[in-house]
Length: 146
Image (cartoon, one colour):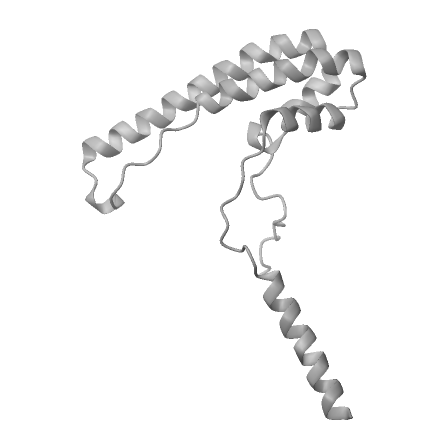
């Protein structure tokens, strides 16, 4: 009887492990801008009237930010890139960052017309806005004592 219990427990554990691994290599789905806008409106605790103004504005804002993304890397290893290619890549990154900052500045004025300043602050404190460390879960350890 004991052997059957151990075998049953083992089968249950093995089955749960296998089912947990299904779809592990599936590509991540991008979030719909409309869903992101609704989620942000909920996070900012907007009323219906303000949400009606904010959601289309935020969708437009996210679309403009998406257009500012840094161009994809060229195929090939970094070691195989010439100095000219590296220079072009760095300049393209600078250009994309400048466009992104311009979009953020222009929409800041638009958001101020719809939201309170505290809500605007909350909106711009998002991790992808660059105000927080990228990896929040990591604690910074104090320097070792000597």
